[in-house]
Image 1 (tube, rainbow, N blue to C red):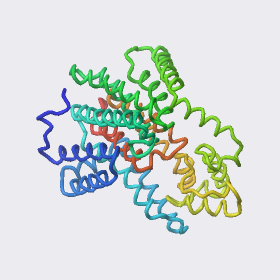
Image 2 (tube, rainbow, N blue to C red):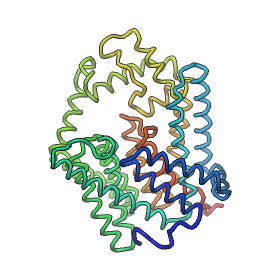
Image 3 (cartoon, rainbow, N blue to C red):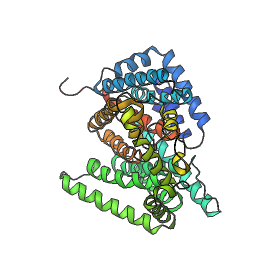
Image 4 (cartoon, rainbow, N blue to C red):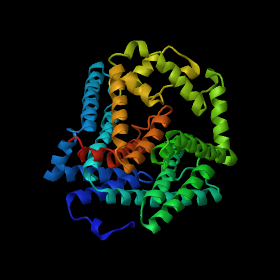
Length: 401
């Protein structure tokens, strides 16, 4: 199967929607404006198409859809709490719209494996181009990230490595398989040699293990796990050999070991301060939370009597789970985790669904240190990805049905 196919020329709302979604995914590499524009056009497309509206509603009757709807309703409840507590951040509130990309993507890619493969090939092409640009840019002295920031660049390149492997092993077309392997090598080089984002290092190692276990050819779980650990060890070894990744890993370890009050000017040091202050908020907000987007104002009140580094302000504790816990309470966190588990279990139904689960593993790991389910680029990416490769399976009837 090639990158372009006459049968995929947009001829109906669903095909046009897939084009817009692919544009949005590609725009996350370089242009928030184009990403927002394609999102707006997607909304207008769904509003104007009776078929898309019908399928959008149908999604909520599925197993994943019901858990998703429960989280969405609890999110709305959390917004109400924030409004009542007067802690709401309306700008951040609007940004939560990105979670709607999951059912949108699910509708557009339902029962169409060929479209999913083309979606992967487009992503690989864009990732490979940006990897090459990043390496060239590094050689001429520009050490800044080419893709928005180093964290975004690193996780996108890490996903491209996994996708490259998947395409090289699961697509029948020889040219596409060669292209998949080539993009794997280029993206891996771009990640390890010139990208300073540590999120990509962590996600790659764990996604490799997930790929070996979920997509491996062996029937024995232990053997697949052993292969995954071996490949992850090799990848980690390459990171320690590369001067760039080795330096960034050493820096993270040293920053984490440093005393709490000496972490004001370091990435990991600031996280330790944010985590320490945020955990002190748990007794007050564990049940009802601050309300969605209310963390920033509640955190400011928490540190108002502090001085020095401990008084640093933030709107994000740099831990997705801690943020949801403090904003939506214990029940909200449980619902979010239940949604992720349900999505993962659904993904095990198909080979492409397992690829979705592999990427989800990476996002769950990096979200211990960031908020990658809600940030602009990473948040949009993961909800689109889960919709395309897992949410779309909700439209396929199981044997029991």
